[in-house]
Length: 294
Ligand code: UDP
Image 1 (cartoon, rainbow, N blue to C red):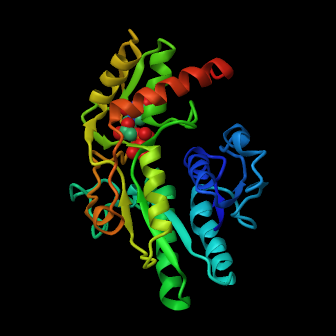
Image 2 (cartoon, rainbow, N blue to C red):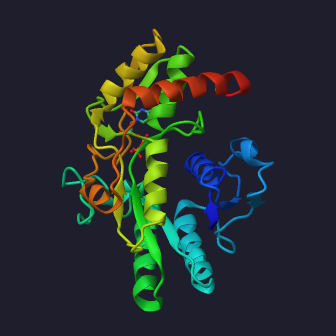
């Protein structure tokens, strides 16, 4: 198949491209390189099945999280409809559930998002993009697949993206205090990127072209405090934990119900968190020796 990956130079995009090339597909990456890194794609640059373009999918609109999700997705829907027989996979997010009142979160849950809060630009952008996808399916017959990605970690994460796994690992490796926001009792369920990528490819290739939405995440739930302690253990770091204020609208708990992924894709995560974290720690050890990130 010929596959276009937007955000190809990013964390998940580059891991997906690696797997697609291993399956002998032809892959084109598009990225505006705001956060994507050419280094993530350098292993593929001599592969004849791979092409890379610097382009902004939100053009002619402005770049911000709403624009990327709403207008970027709209552009891709039009592009998909203009092809003969293309399928669009839209990567949505567990953020559509907001600070959830249902636990674990099933795809049927409509969520609890504060539309004017600091996270709304991302959450509502993804929610609106899901709406575009399903309206375009109903009105124009768009062949679309929607996945809702839960917290994912692994190689090619940016050391300074502000996410909990990258922050804690970098802090531990540099001997700095680990910054736990709030009292650390909030929970997340962390999925290793290889598991996620396997789920994405199964959804793309679904023989009946189901649209979902389907949750892709690891149901292994832990508190942020437990994660901090686990990373201190695995790195052998003697860093201390520092408690900082919890950002507003930070979801108190999050855990995917993956019944639909099991049923329709025969998918569930297989990488235990300790294994995934160990691999991610060695990736960051290596990355930190090559960069000037302070
Ligand atoms: N978090 C934290 N310290 C950090 C970064 C994040 O305690 O240095 C917390 C954050 O408040 C949230 C959880 O870890 O409760 C996951 O944060 P992340 O930004 O990785 O993902 P999201 O909130 O989008 O699930």
